[in-house]
Length: 132
Image (tube, rainbow, N blue to C red):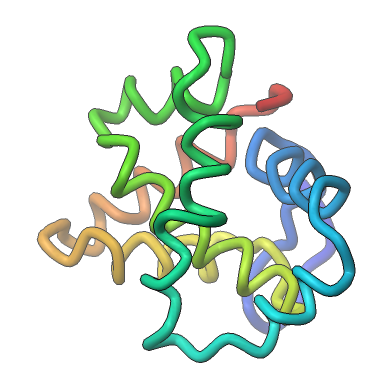
């Protein structure tokens, strides 16, 4: 599936990697620098900025494979955009997209899920190999 490091296998393809790359292309270096410097406790301030962009571009369109996948997983758009924003912030901070990293982000977003449920959800999200 990809190279391995101490944090788990790096995902080299898939819908989430496509999502990260599309945001890389859409945002300016200034925007990504601001996001890179943003503290964890300030991520919620992005709900009506970057979060809205994610919802409108990647979740709401009926043709969005990522949006359809998230709806199949019974995720509401607000919850989905929240953890996708966190995942993107981790990406611009240099963290590779790994099973462990995705599971951590999902566990923070969906604390009511058991560890095995989070692992299964992360696995389903990472196995989807289609453009968003």
